[in-house]
Every structure is written in structure tokens, then in C-alpha cells.
Length: 128
Image (cartoon, rainbow, N blue to C red; front, side, top):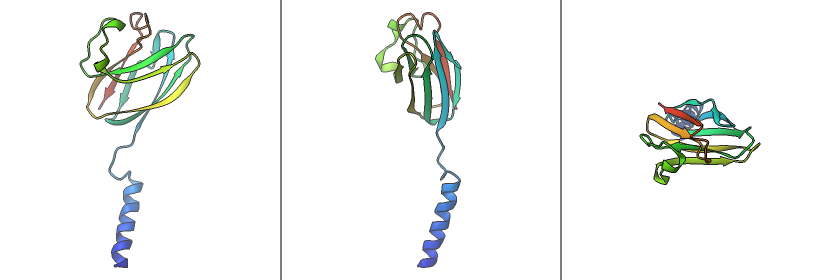
């Protein structure tokens, strides 16, 4: 009995050291400046994605990840049901946020503060 326990303990330790077969979270850092995301193009592995967001701009910004295939031309076109994730940050604020995206594809990233999307505050999140 002790031998089985010892073997299970060793196996569990090996799995833990290797990540247990589960994927680890992707860490992404994005700075929101006035009217742009830096970087504008992000890449992550499907699963949990941790965003380290900062707003170094002079006004509030938000960071929205939309559903695959969501369409929009202006901030007013964005449908609430198309928003998968949203974080809002005041000027000078930063924070850490998490979302889980299981499906691979190119997700639109936008800021819907009035006039920001229209001025080009857009990006993309490619999930593999």
C-alpha cells in the first residue's frame, strides 16, 4: 500500500513540474495611450489570458474583446452580446484582468469611449 502511495506521489510531483498537462495562462501587457493600444496586435494560446493593462493616456479608456466575427463601424454599432470581455481604466490607472477564450481565431479589440474607435483605437487578439 505504501509503495502505491509513493508511486502516486512521485507521479503527481512529475505532473506538477510539467504543468500537469494543463496549459498555463498567457500573460499579455497592453498600454492604452491616447487613441491607440500598444501593442495593437496580440497573440495568445487558447485558455486563460491575463491582461496587464495600463492607461498612460490623458482620458479614460476601455479595452473590449469582441466575439469572433463581430462587426462594427462605430462605437454605437457594438452590440452588448458581442462583448466577451471589458476593462475600464481611468487616466493613469492600471490593473490585471483575466478572461478565458477556448476558441482559436482573431478577436477584435476596441475602445468604445466616444470617438476613440472612430479615431482608430482598435487592435486584434489572435488566439491559437
